[in-house]
View 1 (cartoon, one colour):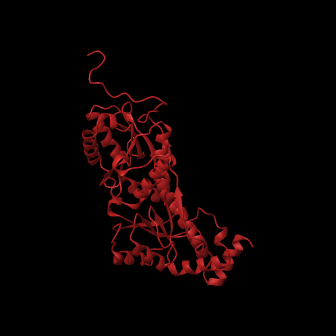
View 2 (cartoon, rainbow, N blue to C red):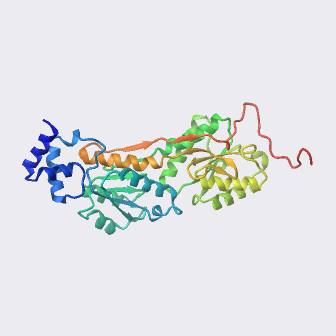
View 3 (tube, rainbow, N blue to C red):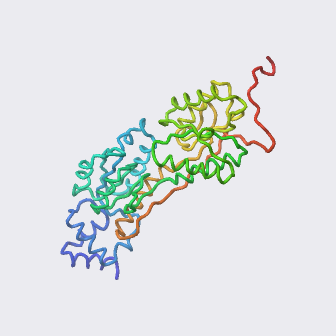
Length: 356
């Protein structure tokens, strides 16, 4: 049966005009919610949705829930850019975006219910919300909902996230392949996602048949700031004999890497000649103090794009299995990591120069 006959058939079965049915299936905003629900139910029954173009967005209104800091580029540039990528993915469509700030944990359930229960809120995207009660409410309400960089432990909601464990393993393994055996990790472990990265780093150590010790191989920061990382690194350098220093630092973010490089340079160490520095982030700082930064870029813009695509699939196939799409990172090789040849050791900065 042709598409035109399908539209006519839907119109006949729903009692709506052909133009109304056409507007609903085209994702236009100038239709009532009641008409939209009737058309979508009939279209699903007739198998029309499965044959529709994936690029056609079948909703008019979407609510994005995220921590308050996500709406300020200076507070959380990562989540801010994820939200911008959602905007860009929806730009070709007539979709009204609304926003609501929620705490990561102990979220305001009443506020969530008020916003998601609004008849004009047809679907939702949750960014970085770990509150299991919010996940329960989202699943029970039955509106299409996709998670970004968080997970529903009861496996009812679909989501998209970086493959944090594999990111940690890949980054550590890269440093090993570059000849570094003494690697110190500086990480912020404020969320389970960072714990997953640490688990991946441990996997790389185990695969290399090397024991991992928190005391020897891990510094933990409270946040991702350059200032705290500089302080931690400076203290570490003051307390560690030169012969016991690592040959490389694996750092959990670009700003943290900036603090590390600052501390190293103030201590008289060169990057990468005396110590290599690698970041798991790679978007915010291409170079630190004129040192081009080698980094494993964590998926960011792709998260919003894939979440919108996943939401579209939930609209077309509401009974399809749920799951989490894990995205790979991208290695960007610059100059802050040097290769150590077998049998070679690094040369520490000498106190006296060649011509002093």
